[in-house]
Length: 69
Image (cartoon, rainbow, N blue to C red; front, side, top):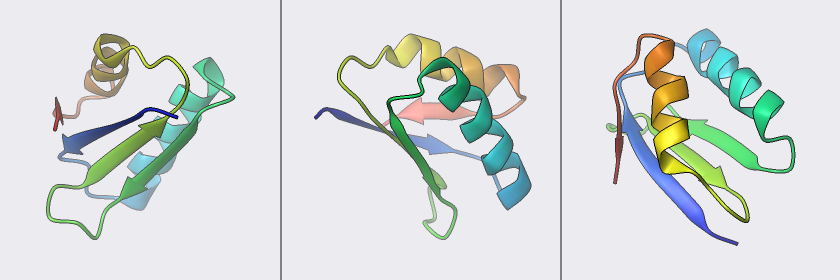
């Protein structure tokens, strides 16, 4: 299954949970996780067909920076 990895500036667990909830609502079959311990505050999205532009739009709409690695 394809995996996209994004660098973010998300700092708080509560913000990560909110973003995961939003993305999971649109993509319920996908595995979406954050690694806030990593220096790049990694967002991982695993699923069959991943629209990276949509992922970036959704996270950016919450006020965070997000860059595909």
